[in-house]
Image 1 (cartoon, rainbow, N blue to C red):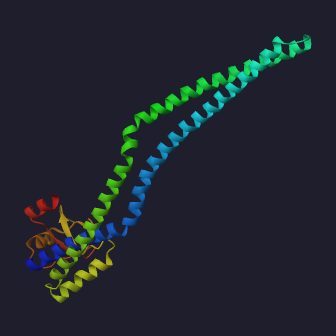
Image 2: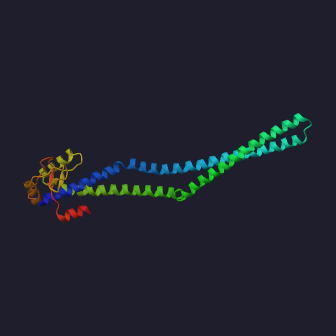
Image 3: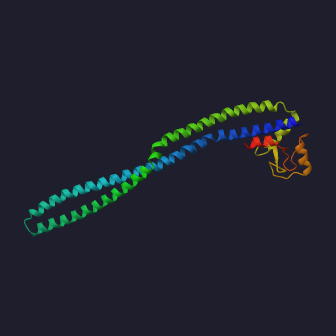
Length: 244
């Protein structure tokens, strides 16, 4: 009976691993998309900063162009002032010069503000230079590692399934049927539960002292009085191996 119990424990470990691998493979597409989205968010934040810099530079260029245009008009207004034939022409030229000078001042102030803003954005981009320069390579590495892990999971699930079949066929038919029935009816697929600190590791129900003794002997298959799962107590070596 101890040998059969050991097979059941081994079978449970294998089935638990198979369930984990299946979940990993089934969720691979969603998790890969989430990983790509994470990198895309980083790339988007960088593109937003770069766009802000470009917009600021474009606005600065527009203001500088307006300054150049206004200065051209100023030169014309200055010529008109010098060649004024009467008081009215003189006053008109003076008003135009005054208005144009005010516009030039407004645009020059704006250019200074924009230059400061550009410097701040450039400083932010500089501080994230490593991130910007390595983002694509890190993305490719992360996706390659993810794909490699999924490939390994698929290979492992094939090995584990083969191992399960080899162990399962060596079980008595009745015991195999009990195991399958328990595994199929539980949401977590647990049919064999370890006794931990005198309690069922699946439902946490405390075992009666006598049952605890019987489980420790391992002379017969014992099931939890609460959840009906097959119980076992790991040896110190097994417990140490499981923990590691």
